[in-house]
Image (cartoon, rainbow, N blue to C red; front, top):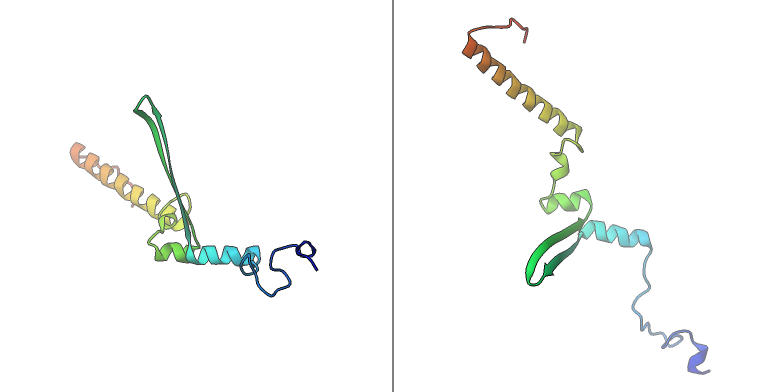
Length: 116
């Protein structure tokens, strides 16, 4: 047998020159989400030594549990993503409006007689 009979160097000898066999895509995704991965990069555009634009990109890919362990939980307080946060934002706005109404009524000495 010659080296040409084997598709990869070392095949048939019991050695794996290219590392262990890779797992499935699901295994890889599970590993990435469990540990998390950060991708960072900067884009800088200069013209004649004058900085025109700088864009800083940071991408964190992880599961919700891993992100929480890293201290990232912005989706829980964003009204667009959380119904609880939307209710809290609405209640806060309502309280501010009531305070303003009370202040205006106190300044004019009137009451609207609205039921609260």
